[in-house]
Image (tube, rainbow, N blue to C red; front, top):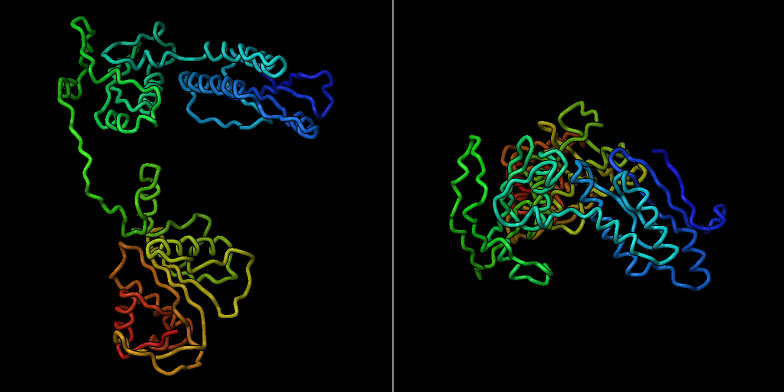
Length: 432
C-alpha cells in the first residue's frame, strides 16, 4: 500500500482544507485526519473548533479496539497518536483502512458517528468471554485465529491489566486458560470501588462443573498443587512503615520500584561509564573546560550524593559552554569495573580557618593562603571503608602540590568526613 491523501473539502489546494492521510507501516496502516488549517480558520472567526464529546468518545473506542486487535494479531510494539482537535489518528489493520476512512469522513462532514461505532464493533474482541471464570480450551480457528503463543501472550496482558491471574498454556492448535482473581486484587477493588467503575467479581465464587474439560498433563510441575487451595488472607496493619532507603529514595516510586532499583544499583556499585568516553586511566580530572560528555558524567555522579544526603543542589552544575573558572573548579572521578565509584568536587580559595577537629571547638584565625578546597566527597556504597576517599584527597593535594594537611574542607563537615579528616590530618585541618 502506498501513501495517499483523501481530501474532504472542495478545494484541496486551500490550506484550510481537511484531509485524511493513509500511511503504511509494517504491521498496520495509520489513518490520520488533518484538521490543522481548518481549526486555525474556524478559531480566527471566533467559533469553537473543539471536537464534540460524542466524536472523541467514538474515536477512542475505535482506537482501543484497533490496538487490541493488532496486539492480538502479533504486533509486538507500542503506538503513538495525537490528541486534541487538530489531528485524529487511528492505527488499524489493513483490511479496515477503507472503513476507517469512510467512518472519519462521515463523522467530520455529516456529524454521523455510526460508522465509527460500527468499526469499533467489528474490531472489538471477545476479551470478556476469553477471561470468563473456569477451566477451558480455546481452539485456534474456532475461538481465535492468531498463533497460540501470540494469543496467550495477548491474554496474559489483558488479564494482568484486569487484576487476574491467568493459568494458561499454549499447544499446537489451542490455548488452555483458567483465569482466577487473587485475594489481594479482590480486596483492592472492594476497598477502592471508585477506581474500578463497573467492576464485577465473576471469579471468586466460581465452581467447576462436573463436565468441565480436563487439561491434559504434559509433564513439568504438577498442575494440581494449587487446586482447591484456600486463598491467603490479608490484613491492613495500623503500623506505618518507613520506606526511605539509605540510597536517598524516599517512599515508593510509582513504576513498581524500577526507578528505585536503578538508583540503588548506581548508589551501591557506581555510575556506569558511557561508552563514548576514552578512559585512559583510573582517575580522571574533569574541569569546566572539559568535553560536555565528561561534564555530564560529573553531573550525573553529583546527583548521587545530592539525593542520598538530601542536598538542595548538586555539587557540579557546569553543563553549558566550556569556560574557564576563576577558582579552578574540578571534579575527580575514580573508575572501577566500568563504573564511577569515587567522586570529589573541589576548587581553590584563599579564605580558611584552622580547626582542631574537636566537637564544639571554635575555629582559629583567618588565613588567606590559596589552598584547594574540598566541596564534597562521595564513594559508592560497595567501595566505602576501603581507602577510596583518602586516595581522592591525596590526589587533590598532589595535583595542587601541597601536603594533605594543607587541604581545606568545606563546612559543615559530615560525620564520615570528620572521620576521614582525622585519619589524614590528626593534628587539625583547614576549613572554609
